[in-house]
Amino acid sequence: MRADGLSLGSWSVALVALASLAACAPATMSPMVMRMGPGNPEDSTIHGGLRAGPRLSAPLADRTSPSGVDSFSGNRAPFSTHQWSLAYDFAVTKPIDEKFSLHLGVQGEFYYPVPLPGYGLYAGVSSWYGTKTLGVAPALVVRGATDFGLDTRGGPGSIIGAEASASMYFSPEDRVAVGLVPFFGVHRVSSEGANTTSLYYGGAMVLQFPLGRKDRLELSGGFGQVKERGQSTWNSPIIGARWER
Image (cartoon, rainbow, N blue to C red; front, side, top):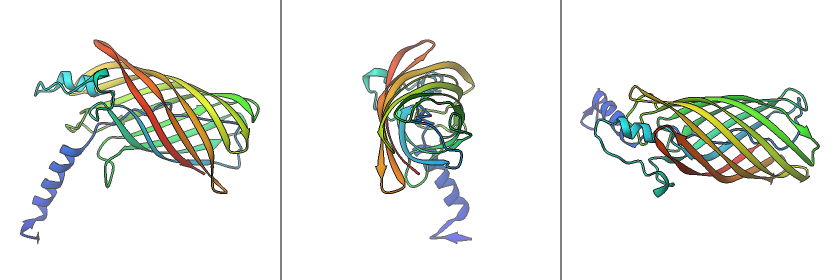
């Protein structure tokens, strides 16, 4: 079978080549859980939007690259897409009771029209202490992400790790909240057969407010720092916007 003078096999090879050139290693979004109040067992919450974070694999991928090209900029260019990116984030929060909630989410790199090819999964649990107006919600999350070994921007790279965080919030009225969420994560990073341990820690301010009768908009911003053995500490901006219902 042929299409416009090219076989389907040729088109497939071309598409794979283009995907590998445009694709991106997974970004690490933090804090993963931003909980601003008690839970209701009868009411799960769906979250969806864009969030930013560092490509933890970028320094290791540069050191192990056969080409020897050093494209990692560190603090010289914190917004470089080689080491920092936006990613799609979709999650579900399922309250067990007023205090405990379960969290499950997926991520995909921000690339039009579909995420290519960095994907990740995360799951965790949070607890809540305080009142509806003022409280704290610590959380523990495990996660993993990979670009499947493709020679991507900031990769190839895969990570697996865990993150602890605590959402400290003030909620003056229903569906309105402002909070501070410090976090600390430990991750095992792999690239081209090499491995290292990466620490990612920092904090984000979070603002939640109504968006219509049932929905809510969540905005987040802050900074994190990445520390990896043999590499100077580098900063990563945190930016995010999610819809939730």
